[in-house]
Image (cartoon, rainbow, N blue to C red):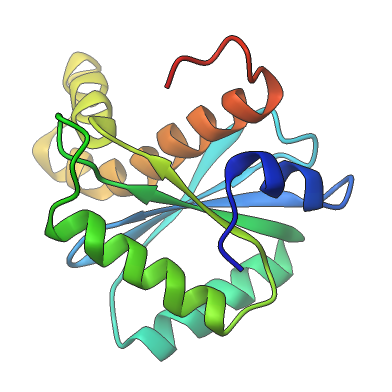
Length: 158
């Protein structure tokens, strides 16, 4: 079921993790929260396949790590409008929700990849290393934003 962030927080079991997904055209960056839902960590980058295969993989990861919900990055344009990437993310979330009993929330991920890439450049990571890390780190970045908003709703301006 697609829910807003507040409803997602209210429906989670006490020790359930959240999974963050950064959906690219070729890859899916995956991040996991801790069981207290305060810290997001990069997990893995998966090369995209057919939806059914991606879904099976994600469900297995979520089951193995005790996930109770999903946060899918919504790549809005800078003016807040939705382009093809945002529409694709919404479609993925709808299709996932139709085949899963986990609550799914969308989270504005504007500039997540740019922020992570800048951090990796500042750390002097090679192009090859950046390519390997950027998607799962972007997933952690967007999941951390959602966790912060869930834990401190009045402080978060996003």
